[in-house]
Length: 229
Image (cartoon, rainbow, N blue to C red; front, side, top):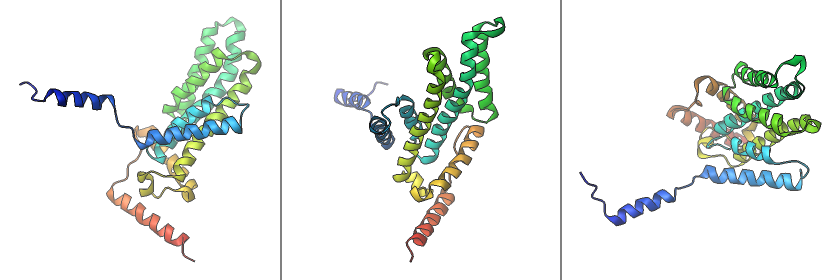
């Protein structure tokens, strides 16, 4: 059966397809990257902002736990990959005992993945391999150690900036869970538990209607307590 839509309706659908809507997360991510870039330009001008900006993108989610999950995976992967690539770099370029370079490269890659598996950070493997190969194949011998350490720190800074901005202006889902700037450390603790849960189950824990209502009541009680003299 032929479609009964008129030519005008068809062009309208095509026009809508070419102009997709963008959500709050995109705006928040752009703002986080802007703040990160400004900090690096005016306060950390001697450092490359690349890994910090990537960390800021990973650290911004549709809710705090999602941003923490992705950002912490990025940081853990970068940390493990950075630690492993430091000795692997030397082994690859000096090839002691006559072992081919490629075997040393694969040995280091194996440890990047295996250590992340041991830690239960399966989703941190990809970020770990990124810094592993970036350092091994783009950095000169004279400064690869300092470069690696700097990129680990930069990643953490970017993730922290995004999480801090999310705390200052929490999403609706975060407000339902009682997440705000004054509950930062509590939110970090809960997000770490959710991170461990997600790495095992493949998804973040979700609150049902009763749990959301309980969180709202808990948030109201804390608000009243803070503003009662």
